[in-house]
Image (cartoon, rainbow, N blue to C red; front, side, top):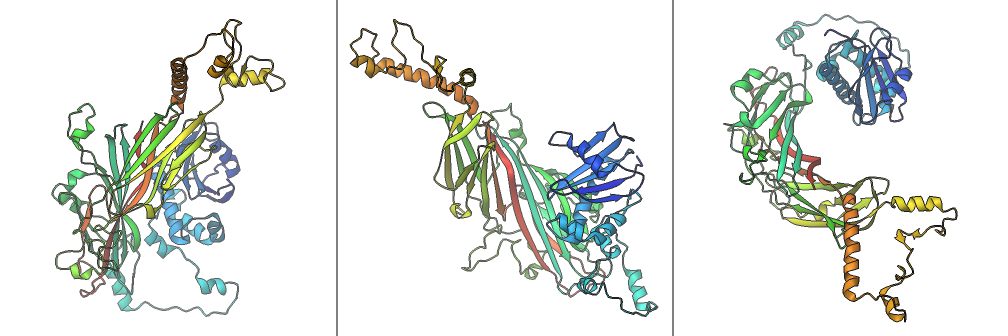
Length: 570
């Protein structure tokens, strides 16, 4: 597959085109392409084939920050390569234009955007995509340049021969596509952020069916010259079995793969300048016995989550209530790990990595491994389409919101209501109201007056009766007070009738009950997999342009996020 990229189109949140960049050939225009893309029902795939165009076209799409990126080609290409190229475009835009990426930033900085798109793809062939290399190729006008840009000042062209010292420095500089040349920083800093996203599915009993943690190690390097860095990872039981814990590892091109194969958990690399994604991984949080659903006698799993979720349906006399119970579990603090290499712990003023950060009172600092903090707690309950409204929402803590136009209930618990370090219990109870029955709709349509005069069924009850039976609109008290010889209902018969009606309503309300609930949260200072950064070591002998006396400022942070990833099924 040696196909080429033909064009890139960018649309704003109103589907108005803000940028079209043509690389080669005569691609589809954005006004013709967008309706063909929107014809497909949401959620739309990232790759759509348009066979009826001339020529048939492949459309790659990416949604980011309310912006729609559409890339077209009429030849066979590697799909993953093109999708990765779209992500690189977004990363480069954010690197040069800042975050968040907005439509007016692209329109007002078209000179920079055009340079980026030209350097990243040459005549349809993907070229330079590393942000550090683009820094040396793309000219960004500074503040004074914008101020004096419209002034025609006379200048004299100057030609200077490079000095021998500069030529020697260029020869000694390694040619790395991901790192720009002549990097200089007044303060040398190294930071690592370990971010994990949870994806957990629980059975109605609370037993986990699947549990995965997708991790990302974001690294920030602000070190002069060409540093050579070694980052060592460790797991819950040490470094000896880290290779069997981590699944599907992916690395930045700067990582030496041979070193990782020889010693799993050791990342040796020359980093780009600035922030970048060093590595990614996936960890299965369930043991082998817990994954075997047929083995019900397997020992209890060791899955430890900061929250526990439980949902009960068909509550109340008529089965119209459901209840969601949330328990905030205590997250044990873990000291040690993630400081620095041996003999370099004094070089870590920022000690969140080692879990010895101290607060104002001398205790552990919140958000560190010694004192993890839970925040942004929110429960989402999807509701069936037959639910018309929630008649009552009862909760002692937090704020529960429901819009009849939406199909879900959101329950947000403020951070101040979550007791840090202690178990807390929260409950939410709701009463559902269903749609009108089909019989009522048909009767209302047949009655021209709308008052139900022409029908014997009004309000969902049948008001017709035989002469020898009591009228249905007469209660038991009316029958007792009347002197008619009609059959009277005893208290026991009334109770049985009420139970029969409640049982019928309970059966009807079963379809109104939610089938699942999910919880979102963020925990600072804790990782679900237990993977931590044991050390960050800068090797001065293998580094270039850096004095041996330089001791960079180092730090590590941990964050676990669940964006509706912990879900329980009913």
